[in-house]
Image (cartoon, rainbow, N blue to C red; front, side, top):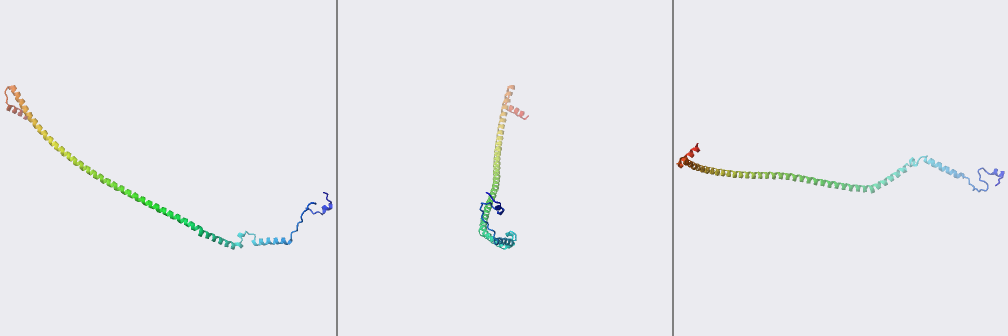
Length: 210
């Protein structure tokens, strides 16, 4: 495309080349620009350049909403959550108390059973001691009576045996005297050819005395 120098001089710098259609841009209205500037300055002046929650201007409304929110949550807690928690804690406390009472009752029963067992054991030991003493005394008395009876029987048997021995001894001595007399008489008769029974008996008696 050929462009004349006159056309190039008349074209504004930065303008599009010929043949390219560019829509016209309407210049900014001075009234609209002033409005935007005034709004920006007003907002900046109103906030003072501070974050709204930290702006003292909004403290009143913030405290009001804080009170409303706190009251709402307090109502929720006091009417919904806390009663349920209280009920749960009360039930748990009652259950714990019942368990403690049951444990105390079981411990008391166990202590009573142990005390009864110890008392029964002590009574059994005492009764066993009494029975052992009575049995010992009975056995001792029985043994003493049997010993006395046996000793009396033995004494009687000894006396009887001594009597029998004395009788047998006397009988044996009497028979010995007769035998000695007869033997002496026979010996004398054999030696001297004449002897009497009276002389033989006298000879035996003198020998026994000597």
